[in-house]
Image 1 (cartoon, rainbow, N blue to C red):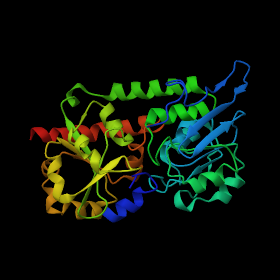
Image 2: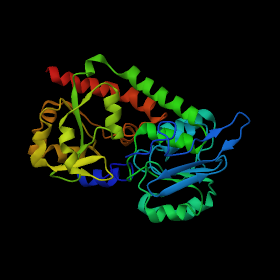
Image 3: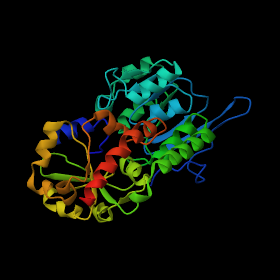
Image 4: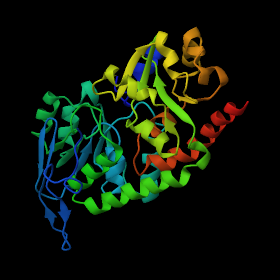
Length: 341
């Protein structure tokens, strides 16, 4: 699975080289900029499915996948439409950090539409976008080709559901003609994470795992965004992750092994994971091999059944980070406390 918000419900129910912008490396994309007079410099952004040629300042933006809506909002462009997030939305039907920020701004909420394999192309057409942002998504070649008939479409750098958080912000900044503002957002996010880090986290190792059904054990790679958030707080990824690269599933940023190999996690001080609900958690933790993972056995597990929190802590962007951190640090501290008992 790529444990994206779109695939999270299915996985939980069952449980229960990258684009570098020209600003960082020459030759992969033309610089985009909005001049002092407000003019927009055309930009071409290559990606895995083609390239997006953006010739005018985007005004009607539609976002697909994870994180693009939030970054566009942080850059001053409220999308006219965004793919719905059924996993993580609150009673308003929107992700809480999106709803809260737009309420604060007094801005209109974007229209939402079905995405993923059931992408509602007609809904996208009706929104009359002049730019479609999908740098962290699972858009297929067929979907991309349809979307480019509507508007320039920015897909992922190399494989679906795989992009680093800073590349995503920089990509969106380039597409919107705001590379300098995007760079400032990256700095701000890094500073927020650094400020939340604690010296006592430095020697604590962790693995971030998931289960794709009973008897399975998935381990996220060290640059996957939810792992990157924990790593940015000062914790150390268990070196065993490097040994699992041979089992990596393309497009998931994770490796899958059997539960019989759970002893690979014996040296992880903490285990991060997620569950759909209490019933799902009980089913997973009732597995003897799972229960014998040292971190699980001693209660050094950082886990949540709050779908909004799971989603927020899985995406690094200017809106999710402040929302997630105030909830994250206390539960990490609780899990670390179990190491001394």
